[in-house]
Length: 179
Image (cartoon, rainbow, N blue to C red; front, side):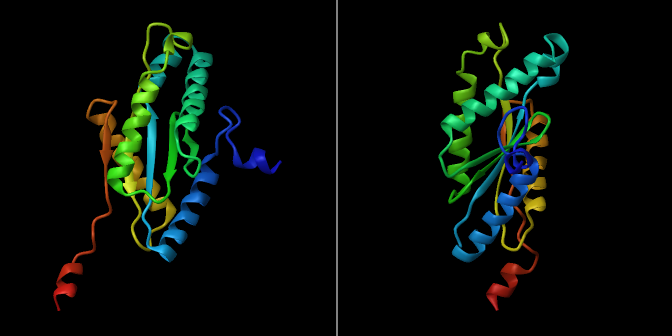
């Protein structure tokens, strides 16, 4: 029962609630250690078209394949879960933003290079990515929302893109440091 409550029934990966809990834990760890981490959301490009043209069973197979292949490539300390119908979240502990960009580019190339003919004949599946780093004293929901905002921007820029978005520093921070 515990596993069912923490995992997405279709893909077997963590569900949104589990991802939010783990981001919260990672924020607490980062606060103690000072070590940054990244959170990414990847949205499958044109999955609604696959569902409409080929069928929802094929769309489900795309989601399952993305989940399986992503878990094979990511580090064992990374956490991967489904946060929305066609969106997955990835926690990258001990990762600076530039390292997160490299990891997401590597994952995107891996997924694009997969032989999709076995799942969606004649199509290649790609995803768009929103990526962010943690900010002191923020909530998991704020961090996830910021990554989702970056994902929306990536999709608006033409899909199969990666957009990073960091929390703006509070106004006056540098003025206080100059005193």
